[in-house]
Amino acid sequence: MKTITLTLVLLAATQNDPGAIAELRAIGQPAVDALLQWRASQKLDDAGEQRFESAIDSVCKQRDCAWSGLYWYTDFDAAKAAAQSQHKPILTLRLLGNLDEELSCANSRFFRTLLYSNTEISAYLRANFILHWKSVRPVPVMKIDFGDGRVMTRTLTGNSIHYVVSPDGTVLDGLPGLYAPKAFLAQLQEMRRLADGYASWRDKRGSLAAYHSARLTSARRIAGDGKTGARASEVRVSQPSSAWDAAPIAVSKSGTEIPMLDRAWFGKRQRPLSNLEVTWKTMVADDDFAALDEHSLALFRAKRTDARNDTFKAMLKSLKKSLTADTLHNEYDLHTRIHEWLRSDAADLESLNRGVYEELFLTPDSDRWLGLYPRDAYLAIDGDGITTSSAAPADTSARRLSGVPAQSARSHR
Image 1 (cartoon, rainbow, N blue to C red):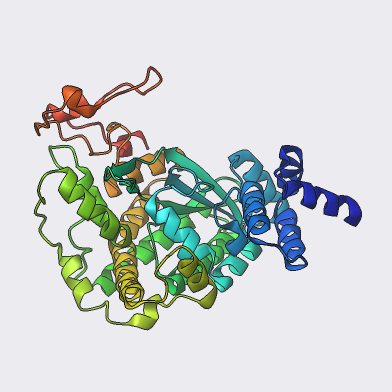
Image 2: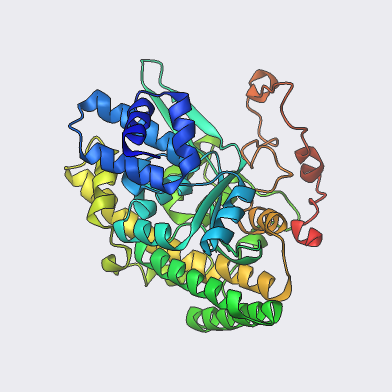
């Protein structure tokens, strides 16, 4: 596209012209780079900056794209075609909600704010992966109206996972949940090495199984006693999991969800600490492990109204600790399950993802209420305060609540 024509398209896009947005989106990452260069050459007022951010989010298909500069595919076949032509693996994100909306699930919001905005991480992602995301299901949104004009909005439940997929569509690995920035970058580098190795292996299936077997052995050795502690899937045996069970699986987001769940369920549910959680208590003191770069901190502050006071500093310190805990939990508990599966099964992406959401994240497809509907609690509200549209999915949770567990997604792989 000629420079003068591209400039006109960029200008039209920042005026929310749908045709210009579509034209830039069809170009891909170079259009995102051009938008960022265009903004750097302009002196935009607040209104102009808001229009620009809206435009670039629409082109990227990612909220806060002005900070990450990352282009995301939402059509997996198109992502595969790009991966094959550019000889890059695909990094595909599965999440609740949509990545281009403010209220996607909490973990994906942390990805946008703490990881994708990280200067080193975003550069590595652009250079080494074709990016794709897909929504697993809508994210539950809770609004609390205090009756005097104040409304608090939050999302509840939901977890996210990044998969690395070869250009031929083979699932190579999965990175569940949130990692601290340094650890996330290290995992991305390992995933790229794995993808390069896979491309050259003669016995691809056997070598991939051997890789995951070695990673599993290493993780268990590092975890301490050859075991990975109490696994998340052990929480649900003969009864459906609740949102309270699922929330602590992602430590960082649980800090915002558990207080609301405690009150919504009329009293805190006691949950014993796993061995791995006890281990966290002795390992979260290393502040540098979860350090945020200056670019991410700038976005972090931009989303806060109290970015300079002592409360903010305390919140940042707490976030770093929970990021460390998240990393340890995800790597030495949840990720080991994925290594177990991939060393023995040649799983297709969709089947593997169903298993992850059911057995690791405790948010199975069979429970359309995501553990948020406690049918054994009397609420004294007509119809329990539940309304559904004609387009709502059929309720299969009654079968599970009667004591008959849903069929494991693993049985389909």
